[in-house]
Length: 112
Image (cartoon, rainbow, N blue to C red; front, side, top):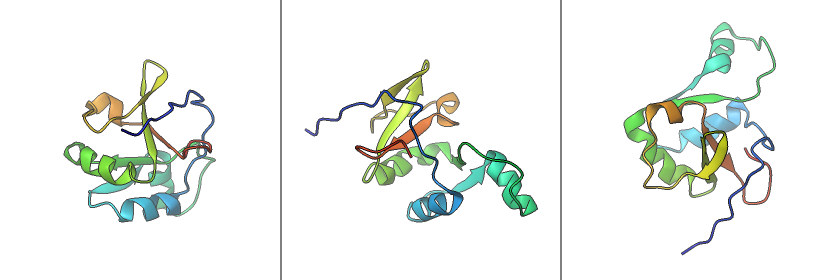
């Protein structure tokens, strides 16, 4: 069994760019789209402000498929009560946890 050290530095993360998100999710067989502030900016064709993150929507019933693909190259975390917890394969995230709550990290670098 692989031992994973959980990160606790929740504020030490680097946002993936929209093109990077597109590259990552284009390889995953799920329905997805950019959401939030970036979705509005993409719709109007220009960036209106600095964004701290990129929101991605997936269908709830496809979250485990997304998990299987993302967990090959990333360590996945979820937030619970303001703290990080490892997102395990067997965790089916309820609706309120999916939106804006999953962080992915490289083993040694900042969160991405």
